[in-house]
Image (cartoon, rainbow, N blue to C red; front, top):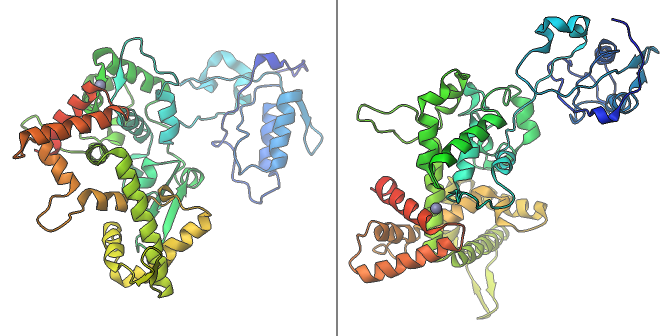
Length: 446
Ligand SMILES: [Zn+2]
């Protein structure tokens, strides 16, 4: 194929794609391996697809690509002049090299693969319209768009690895962008960054629901329902018609998270994703029961108390109460109550307490959400706290009211009206409240 130098037209457009499949690992940082430079020669006079974003690529290599794309030409180390005739951006499922009519161009095309989004928050942005489109009045109950996005992301994770991995704990997978979890010995907090997960799990994102397919699924469910809940998302994912002629892998990828086949009675047992949704909903219902603001204030108070008491415990000091000018002992019961929720044993409590304070010191701020295990533990303590052994916890009170098991019907009704008002102020509509109330009553608390 003759190589003819032509002016490169920026208006033709170009895209940045990955060449992970064809680039060997770089041995040393900063140097451009010879085998990489050969990529330019292979592309000489033809088409080049590249990814400029990868941190692993030496800066020099990236600037060579940058020059090649913007100028249409570069000179490699052995003085070969490389011209780029065309830059094609193509997203398709066909393998260009197998197309016969490409002729000599075929061996100049470097195969690349796009990785599908693996970060739930990125996926959520795709499915979350910036402006609320009220055209057809379709809406999702709070938490449902996220469940949907999680299911889409799960379909892109390698099945053998989608559950029970130590590095990529379940939580880390659910939050591919970086989950935080206590180590197995409960001593310290670990994060799994997107980059780390990406490197350890190179096959994730190669298969599964594409962005387009996810959009089609969403349109489908929006066509039949206006107030979309967990049941609607799940019955769509369980519909065998949807998988006909599709990548059958998808089923094996999602089946650990959603039970796809019913038992003999036609019932579906609880999968992990629905469990996740139930804890989400339970939390929202208790927050509404106590009042969202009050719940938030209680969390803050527990958090400050935990840090303060843990610090004084570590320093072996009493706590000075400015109101009464008294010195009070550290409230070890409160510390233990919260630590129990995280599975921290008595044997390691000393280390854990000083570790938590060190963590927030290193963060340079005291934001509870930075330490998810502590955050979740405090929420669980609030939800299950009993004033005395005969009292009901906020969760139990809410449960009784929803099940209409209370003595004082009038009082319970009033309280449920309060719950509804709280939920309406936090993203739910009246139909959503009816929907989640029935769901909780029939499936969660039955
Ligand atoms: Zn609704």
